[in-house]
Image (cartoon, rainbow, N blue to C red):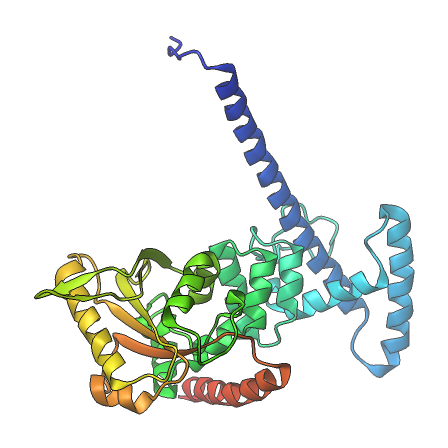
Length: 365
């Protein structure tokens, strides 16, 4: 027996049909993008395997790519220039690890690759992977790929995170012992220290780096660009309130920004400082954290995290006030412009030596 259904208004019917078609179109585009990413990887693999490394085959390789480019353009039209084929080759070399998911028999007949998947993220297109190819460090590249897929980053957002060294700043914010603990932690385990970066780059605010900048002006700018600020904070942050009032025996306090971290299941209170961090700032944040833990935090929530964003900090002050075992309150610097290329390269060299030493010690244990 047919189920009775109310009669739809023509405009409502149109809206439902449009929704169906738009969803189908998005799914088709996503499928096509995913298939093309895999196809480019396979083409890159064919080129790499045909043109083996070695000086004696270098000239042969260059001529082979030119011939292949001309024939492909004749058969399929534009899109297979020598430069693009070289990109496919580099794409395969950057993601050779995906070969472990290969289908049986594909080597013998590479034309039979219907439904083949090299383990790429279906939601990421070729433009995403072109950006990822420019990341040299394999661990950083894998991190950006995973975060871009899980957060739905556009190509522009992904490129910003790469250019602002999101991954390196996240690692830099951990001391070597804490980095070691992070490596030894259970997969999927997440702690407050894992979400803190240092420094935070707020170049999207388009504010001058000046001592005259007020905390109110900084806060206003962050609120007006909240989407970019959430992206800079990282995955899992949800905005809760601005200047939430805390009243204690008639005295009022106003933490600048309050977030909730979905994965950590805890409140994150952020206070903005336009000068060097003082012991009074740390003490005030301790008050905020204690208040949230006692008055706001629910039964299923984890302890509140406090984050002090400042132009200059003193880690010793934080340690002596809060103790060595502190895992709730963190101080991090922010800067209003991306560092220069020279500054980035110098910082990267220093930090990667530390990271590689830490990883090496863990592997050889």
